[in-house]
Image 1: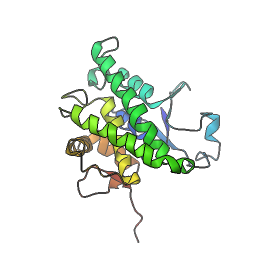
Image 2: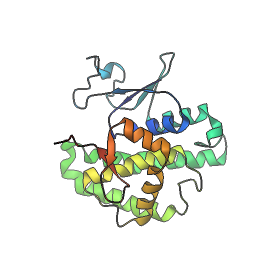
Image 3: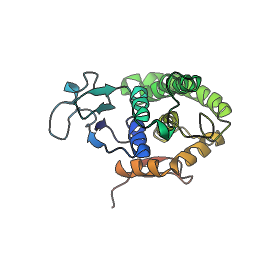
Length: 215
């Protein structure tokens, strides 16, 4: 399989899931801004929307949209427990979390990075803060679904990791900081971070950013 990705972007979520499942995956970096691939071709020929992630299967089939991709990956190895069995109430709960993260955190946080939307940044931050207030109250167990790590936790980890790039301190939400630390400690997560060249960027060991080049 090939995973078209940006470092530390939402594509890190399916990358983490691949590592958790022990699935071999080739990372294909997409150059931000130009959409160029390593071979010089245009990524928009792969995805006309121009954004990652795209998962390309061995037969050439391409899957898009992170929440769908991570569920497909988890279903390849249902024994992993990364996603409850399709058709169950627990699977619906997982999809509810994935939808919440996609619409209420991923979207406003991603919009914050768009220079054209700079005038709206205060409003976007207010939305995110309100959602984090609610999320911290819901996180009563180690992970979103309770005791067991799921694909939704990988997605949430990636979005919360963007807080540092937006100067949004997670300190007011100790439950979220603890969540980030728990996810960080997983070997599969560490393998994905290392493969993308991401290193601890704060004293809590909860946030990760591209390693700085040696002076």
